[in-house]
Image 1 (cartoon, rainbow, N blue to C red):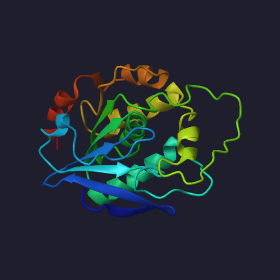
Image 2: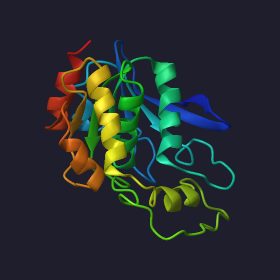
Image 3: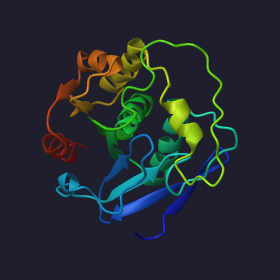
Length: 218
């Protein structure tokens, strides 16, 4: 893999990887919890006509690790927004945790995200729909490479209320101008994803079918 492009979000250095060059709108891959960007696009993405990029979230892969944790899905949405500012309009494919981040970004940046594909993967459910008992996270970071243990501990308990997730789905549906701004390709059904699946503008299909659809939209 070629050296990544380094972006900045707050005080974090983010690694944005070019998996395949090309012209036109980019496809941006968002990995799951504890993962990192792949060295090459997955075979199912090869039909995408434009360039393909992948982002290492804060505390993952070649991106830097903040002191003391503080991870939330919204922090990672800021990571993805920094990639969006660099790439311009994109179609998102999110895996696990990356699928939830893709939903948030599709609602927060509806003019720039031209379709979000939500797939199974680690961290999809997060910590459920409601807060649990408070816990102090104090993992041992000694000689541990990425992923940051704080990221694994905190994002696994990140609360994802269904009504919060559906607010982003509705904003994408109303403001994106797309008939179908969000496609679910996941089999797992966390509470937030079940709620999103019932929203207008959200459909279920295969990744290949979703990418063919989004490749054709302006």
